[in-house]
Image (cartoon, rainbow, N blue to C red; front, side, top):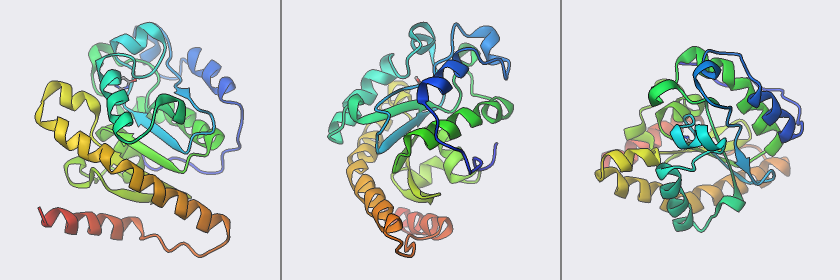
Length: 225
Ligand code: URA
């Protein structure tokens, strides 16, 4: 699993990054996919959603989350009082893995630069991870989604918020309730992320818990269930 994304990226137009994604040959995935799917949405969004990788429908249309998982994502966003116009949506890998297999570490590594540059361009306050591959990118390879979903962790000057992947509920209905809980918690995570961003911008010392204590806090929370 790849480590934390590199820092120090300079903001550049999202369309430039999208053009590079569309002609990308950095890993094997372009050979079997129909096209690259860079992502789309509000270029000044406070919320960036990061999924796993394009599926069948996304590969055909060149847009993220446009199949059944995307329909559910729209419903979940609406629960949180958000629409696609409010957020930016992208994926850890930008070409569809064949037969929707898991993205491989070297593919995520090769694609990581695009995600980094998108983050630098958008400067979101909250990064919502959808599924375990996206979660591992921001919460680290040791994190377990069943333990940390619905919790936040400081990531650079942003917050990351872990959610199950919408497709989980399509395959196993028992995940629907957990996903709804994750998205019901999104407005609170966003409020915290905005508060943190404002405090950091005004030069206040960062009072957010470290990633370790955030994970401990979520363990404590889980032990209450
Ligand atoms: N699943 C993902 O992770 N991303 C998409 O864009 C579509 C389905």
